[in-house]
Image (cartoon, rainbow, N blue to C red; front, side, top):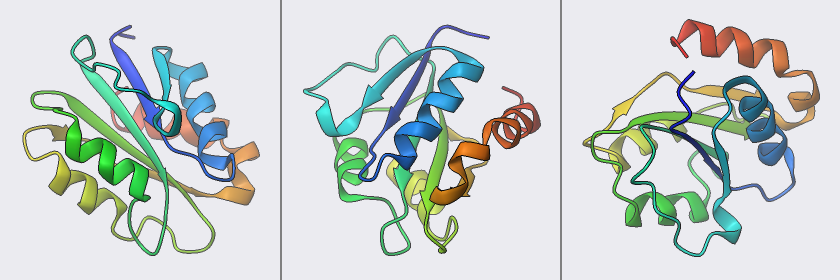
Length: 131
């Protein structure tokens, strides 16, 4: 697996952070907490996982802000999301629209209360999308 992987996420309740750590354990790379970021560069990364909780059927505001100010042109973007009951809804579509010059791979979504049981599901998803 390439070491040029960034796992950027925002987590309000801790569930998305747990999921980011599960992904990190599977693929390696660098973790970036968007809520604590002070302007990290993505230039060194080829693949950028983007994690968000589902807020009102879309991305959290911190992730929207991050994507609107971060140039991911030419990068592979891999969305992931935690939710209460809403599922993925518009998360993947909104990430795709905010990353028009990126290759956006199929997303992963899981209920926040199921994150602790996610490692096998994450491995299956990563295998399915070729990572």
